[in-house]
Image (cartoon, rainbow, N blue to C red):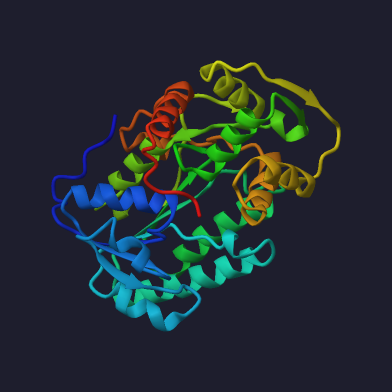
Length: 316
C-alpha cells in the first residue's frame, strides 16, 4: 500500500539522473503519469526519446561539470539514480564519488530543493564490499553540499529487468546442479521494485525527511532461500552443493557463463553478497505508510512480466 503524496504537492519540476537505467526508467513513467514536469538526464538522451516523448530530455555527463547547470536549472527535486559499475571493473568507486561531488555542488548552486537518492543497505561499521561502501559514500557526498538529501537504502530489488534478479533467475534457470560458495548463506532483505518506486514517489515534497531511510520487504532470507523459492515457483528442482572457497572473481566468471550480466557489473554485485543486507532501523521507512509485499508475491509479479515480455527497462 503506497502512501499518497502530500496534498500541497501539485506539479513539480523534477530531474531524473539515470533515467536510462532500470529504476530510473520505471520511476520516470510514474512521475509522468502524475503530470509532473519531468526532465530526464542521460549521456545519450536519444535512447529515451521514443519511450518518453512527453518528457524533456537533456544530455548530462556527471564527470563533465559543464553539462550540469542546464540540467538543474529550475528543478525542485532531483532523483539521483546513477552509478559507474558498467564503466569497468576497476575505478568505479572514484568515478562515483567524483560524480556525486560535482552533482551535489551544482544542485546547491542551482537552488535545488531536495535530492532523492537510492543507495544500498549494509552496516557501515562492518567490512563492506567496495560496491556497497561506494553506494553509501555517494549518499554522504551528495548530502555534504547543503541540499537536503533523502537516501533510501535497499538490498536486492526484485523485478523483471533488475540486475540482481536477473542473476538469481538465470542461475536457477540454467543450472540444475549448482556449486555454491559461502555467500549463498548470507541474509538479505529483498524488496519489490513496485515498493521501491512507491517510496521514491512518496518522498516528493518532503525534504524535511532528509536522512537515511532503510527499506526492505517483510522477509529476511538467505540467497539460497531466494533461489530455492524461485525454483519452486517455476516448478523446478535444483540441487546446491556447498564448497568452502569460491572467490568473487571466480563466482562472477561462473555467472558470466550462464547469465547475460557483464562481469563489470556481476563482480561488484557478487562481492557484496558476503555482507548481510537487512534493515536495522525500520522507523524512518514506517513514516511513509507503505506496506511492502512479501518476497513470493514480488517474484510472482516479476515472472508474470517476464513471461508476458513486459520488461520496460533493464540494467544496462
